[in-house]
Length: 391
Image (cartoon, rainbow, N blue to C red; front, side, top):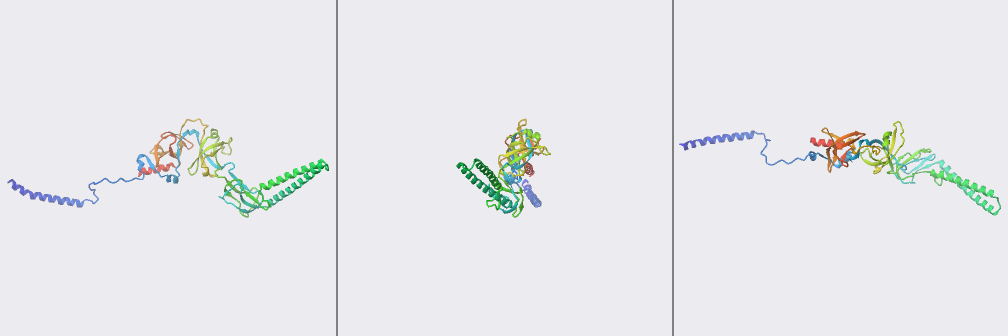
C-alpha cells in the first residue's frame, strides 16, 4: 500500500517542478539586461592624472614649470629682520655704455651701422659732412706749417750763434717761437683727432670707443645735426650693475660685500653682492642707493629693466632662522604648506610660519636649510594639487 501512494505522488512532484521552472524562466526574461552577473575577475585599475596624490605629491613636468614661470629656490638661513626687499633698476656699469654725439655742425653723409649690430672699439659707425671739419683740418695744416718754419728758423739761428755771427738773443727768440708753434700744432691736432676729422678734411667720423652692440640710433642719412646731438648708444655685453632704492634706515644696515638676489620679471634669480652703498639720500622719497654687482647671468639683465632685489643685511643683529619668499607659503585646508621639489614634481609640506615682513616669511619648522621649494607662482602648484585631489 505504501508503494501505491509513492507511485501516485511522482506525477504531482513533476508538475510542481515544471511550474517552478517556468516561473524562473519568466523572471529571468523580465530582469534588466544590465543586471550584474556573477563576478568572474577583478576589474583593471584606472590610472589617475595625479596617481601620487595619495602620497602628498603632485607630478608636474619640468616643461610646465618653465612655461608657467614657476621658480624653485632653496630655503636659506637668516632672519626676517635682516632681509630687505627693494625695487631696483638695471644700469650700465662704468665703462659699459658709450654715448656717441656729434662734435660739430654737419650733415649725416653715411650710416654704417644700425640698432642691434655688433661693433668693435674704433669702428666707424657714421660719417658727417661738415664745414667745421674742413676748418679744423685747415687749422691743423696751418699749425704744422708754422711749426716746420719755426724749426728751420731755430736751426739757422743756432748755427749762426755758434759761429759768432748773431747774438744769443736772436737764438733765444727763435727757440721761443718754436715752442709756441709746437704748442699750437699740438692743440690743432688734438682738436681734429677728438672730432675724428679725416686726413683730407672732407668728413668727420663717428667712432665707437668700446666693443658691444648698438642699443639706440638717432643718426638718419641726410639729417642735419648740431654739436652734442646724440647719434648712437653702444652697450658692452655683461657690463651692468643693479641700483636698488632703500630707506636711510635700511641703508645703515647694509654693508659692502653683503649677499643679495636679483629677481627678474621672468622669475629668474641672479645672485649678486653689494658693491657700494651711497652715503646720502636724495630725491623727494629720501631714498638711498645700493649698487649690486651680479655674480652670474649678467647677460640676461637688460639696461633700464625694473627688477626686485632681496638684500641680506649683515648689519642686522638677528637670531638665526629659515627664510623663504612669502609668496612661497600657500594654504591648504587651513594649514600653511610649502611645495618641496621632488624628482617628478612637488610635495606639499606643512610648515609653521613665524614672522612675515617685507615679502619674506620666517619658517619655524617643517623644512630645513637647502630644501628647494616653489616660490614665484607657487599658487599654480597649489592649483594642480587641488585639481588632482578633486579628480
